[in-house]
Amino acid sequence: MSNPVFSRSDVFGEPRRTGNAGGRRGGTATYPNQSPAYGTPPQPGQYGQYGAAGQQAMDASQLDAMYESPSATTADTKRLTYDDVIIKTGGLLALLVVVAAATWTMVPRPMLTTVMIVGAIGGLILGLVNAFKRNPSPALIVLYTVFQGAFLGAISLAYNTLFEGAVTQAVIGTVSVFAVSLFLFKSGKVRVTPKFTRWLMFALIGYALFSLINFVLMITGVLDGFGLRSGPIGVIVGLIAVGLAAASLIVDFDSIKRGVEGGAPAKMAWSAAFGLLVTLIWLYLEILRIVAIFQSSD
Image (cartoon, rainbow, N blue to C red; front, side, top):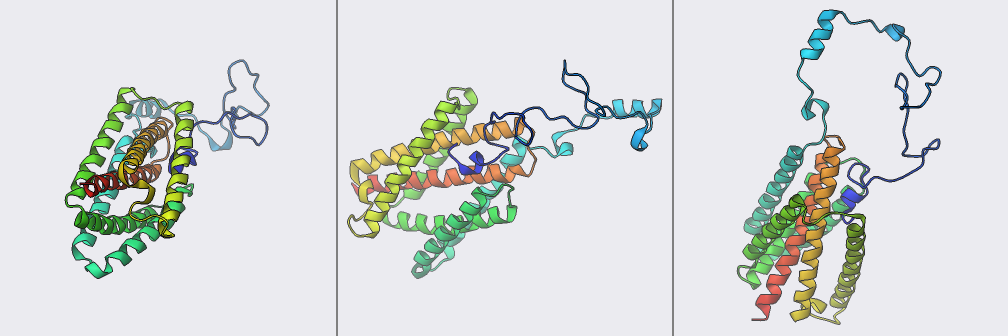
């Protein structure tokens, strides 16, 4: 899976085939007082005794009340819903934009570089912590959003100062790619298969290695500007990165769909929202860089 937020999760990850030997995951578990599977003889003590453990038979009025009561909703069972994911994702995006706008308008220009570095490092550390946590921490996810908002506000202002209108174009491009990815997933035109996820994983590893080499060449002074991502090659690499981000979004959507259909706990909406936020931030930065490369060549 491309996004570690989803791929490392037992809730959103793909089902694993395992044996049913003692202590191993998978297979069919049996619990006290549970009926055996079809064709399997009952085991001693599997059925509870009538009236045991303080159980009492229900009278007619209690049975009528039980059957006439409304069915339990996902809110009653505290299961994950699409509304949960949408609300959490929308809230985090709103916070991200507010912090970025505050950084853009209120941070003095001499402090902009410091805010950018602190936001980037803080966002990286908190992103890794949240990505590898089995249970989501709303506080850490919100804190990650604040750091990333400060980083995006600072870097967006820097780009927009050098390349006027770049931020607006990058925002429009991000929204457009997100919408197209969602349409392709909902329409079934792109299906998430094991082959698709393997291809995406290898492509992301290759892109990460390329980016690391480019970063080293830039900080050591071997290359200047955007390094290997300058000119036509930079545009091609950027478009490939946007395609990988779009594919990652589709995989994210599929993971969320499996979580909802599998009855995941409602708290996992925080993990889903965090995973989408990580991919959207990456997508925005890639499009912003492509716009800057185009404008720098004019």
